[in-house]
Image (cartoon, helix red, strand yellow):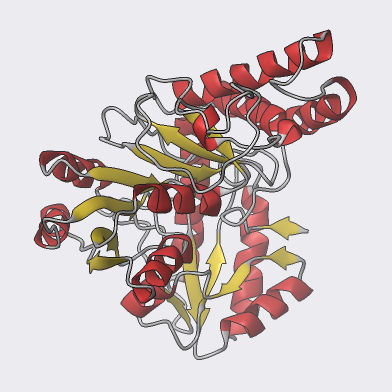
Length: 380
C-alpha cells in the first residue's frame, strides 16, 4: 500500500507515538481529579504536553493550550465563543467547511454575518481585500494557514497584523500547516490557533488544539461541566484551560500527541517540509508534461508559497473514479470536494472535484515513481 492521504490523517504513526498510546492505556488514569499517585502522574503528563505545545507554536502561555477533540471543534469554540448579536467575521475564499458551516448557520439564524476575502497571487492585494471587508462590528478574521485542497499559503502573518491594527482578533486554522511549516504565534500575529493532532503533528485521532497567545480568557463557553477545579461552585471556572475543558479529556490522545511532538522536534519541521516538498516537486515535474493531466498549482514556482499538497484531474474523468483506479494499484489518495466548496469554486473544479496527493515524512521516492506510472496508465 502507498498512502498519500496525509492531509486527511497521517499514516503510519511513528512507533514512539504507538508506544506512548499503549503506555497511556496501561499506566495512566484520570487527570486533575485525584491525589493518588496514578492521578498525579497523569496530571503531570498532561501538563508536560501543554508545555510542549506552547513551545512548539511559541505561545507565551502554557495554560493557554486547550485540548479539544479535533480542529473542527476548536474552530467552532473560537467562533461561537466570540459571538455577539449582530457581529461580523471575515474569512478567506479558501476556507474549509469547519469555518464556513458554523458561520453560515449563525448567519441563517440572524445572529451574525460574514464576508469572504479573495486570496490573490499578490500578497498586498490579498491584505487589501481583507481590509476592505472590515466593518465597525467585525470581531475576528479567520484564515487558513494553507488550503487543504490546493496547498496555497495565504500571507496569514500580514493578515494577522492587519487584524491587530483594527483591534480585532485573528484566528488561524492551522490544520494543514502545523508540523509542516514553522508557526510562531507571536511573530505571526496569531491570537487563536486551531489545529488537529492527527495530521501533520503525527498524533492520534480524537485530539485537537485550541491555543491562545496569552492566558487572558477571550472566549465564552459553549460547553460547561466538571473541570476538577472549584467543584463546590455552580459556575464554570473563569480561567484557562479549565474554562474551556469540561469533562474528562482524551488522556490517551494527549499523551500520544506529546510523543508525536518529540518526534517532530527530533527530525525538525524544516526537514519534514523539505522532504515532502522535494517529493511533490518531483511528482509535479513529471506529470505536468502530460496533456491529459490537469495540475492546479505549480510547485516549481518559487514565488508561490505552497505546502506539499498537489491536486489534479485526468481529462474530464470524475475524480472519484480516478481514485478507485489508483486504489486498484494500492495507492491511497483523497478524491472529491474535501469539505472545501469555496476553494473548488475559486478553481472552477466544483463539477469534478480533484484528486489530492499529500505525502509524509515516511513517503519514499519509489512510491512517487509508482504513483506517476499509475497516473500515466490511467491518463493513457
